Amino acid sequence: MKLNIAVLPGDGIGPEVTKQAKKVLEAIAYQFNHTFIFKEALVGAIAIDKTGEPFPQKTLDLCLNTDAVLFGAIGDPKYDNDPSAKVRPEQGLLKMRKDLGLFTNIRPVKAYTQLLDKSPLKREIIEGADMTIYRELTGGIYFGKKHISNDGKTASDLCEYHEFEIERIAHSAFKAAKNRRKKVTLVDKANVLESSRLWRKVVTKIAKKYKDIKLEFLFVDNAAMQMILNPTQFDVILTSNLFGDIISDEASVIGGSIGLLASASVGEKYAVFEPIHGSYPQATGKGIANPIASILSAAMLLEHFGLLEEATLIHSAVEKSLELQISTPDINKKSKFSTTKVGDFIADFIENPDDSNINYHNIHIGQSTII
Ligand code: IPM
Ligand code: MN
Image 1 (cartoon, rainbow, N blue to C red):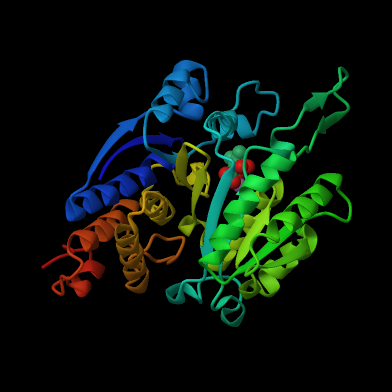
Image 2 (image 1 turned 120 degrees about the vertical axis):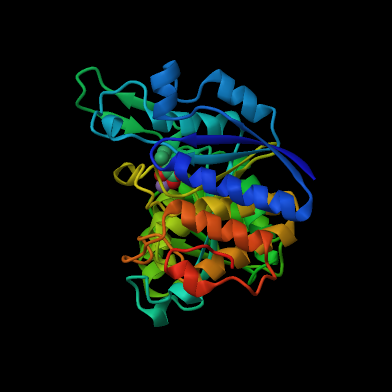
């Protein structure tokens, strides 16, 4: 298969982790005889520095003319500490989501057997947890009318949803549940919010078309508690933009590190694949950022194009790295493995999946990965 892939490394650790994901995709191309053509463009704070815009027209044009986008991270402390900044890196990400119509954000979360003791949650609570969050991405309070009064003392953000916005993501969530454990949990705040009541009404109507799928409802406050009390109850979680943002960060604790969580943002025509972690400025350039979230986002990209065997191989390589503790310090505090070394191991494994000659002892003393 030939794929044109736009690479938007962005800020902070974005470039470091994206480089590893690209390396892994190159290993897949080599192993399976695909052609992946990568083109880079600017986004985020670095794009503001160079062009004055967080998502320049040139970047949009590239995204509109490629098969998929591999996104790194955006954000810089110089904007976080300045609420009066008129142009912010986050606007670039939101503009990209809106301009490309990426209304469905898919965030898979699972407890890896190899990492059960790395999570701050007890092993017996997280063991077997495996869920996918379907977060609505181009509507709700993120994109509703914003207002600040002239005296600067009153502000508001409108949370508005239209029926069609709920319908299209609900269909995606129910379809996903068909291939999983056949359960959808709608997370909302229907006891208080009118927009949540619309979600319940629309999702209940759609559920009738998916007779084999069980639909449950949870208020978001309860869902936040259930997520750490009994996460194995969840299969597919369907929710609005803001609730999905919050609950997916919370869910990342189950996996042991936010550095493991990948995501896909898809619409009718375009798709972007990105780690859910941010730009982690404190780690920039230190070689300690976990590349796995970006690498697994690349696996989601392959799945999106039906390259399932390829995606499975990436998953096996990642699991092998976790099993052998070839991990960055977020997973293993005493780790000697850098971002690049983890990426090298995963790419090597892909190019030599049946190679029983990998010298695991040498890996840990920092020598060559293959004898
Ligand atoms: C995410 C991020 C973004 C969001 C920020 C950076 C705007 O937190 O992708 O989850 O809130 O959607
Ligand atoms: Mn977030």
